[in-house]
Image (cartoon, rainbow, N blue to C red; front, top):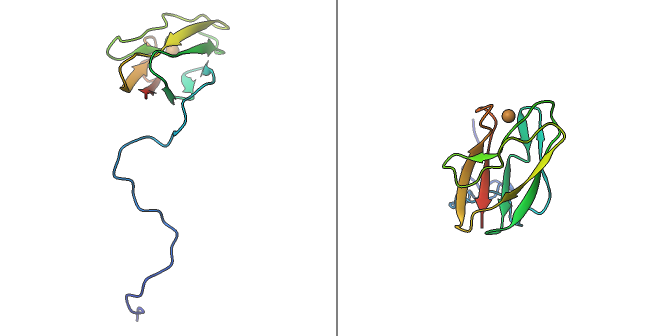
Length: 109
Ligand SMILES: [Cu+2]
């Protein structure tokens, strides 16, 4: 038999109704492209701020907004480019135009 419906003292936090990603502070580091992945893939920038994107892989990659809002262009192996965030807050899906399975989300906030 199961015990009565007494309250269990679990520490599970209530689900957050807002869809905000769990990254409270703006990202200030460098985006690193390893072979076929972005690190981090999801990050937050302030409007109009810039971040360096470094390609440590062995083939060229890009970091390109799905809607074309930003585009580093091809970054050669060992090279880097500057990504400037849009001034309009929101979430921007991006990918590598050479490898469409390389994806991430830039949040401008
Ligand atoms: Cu790529």
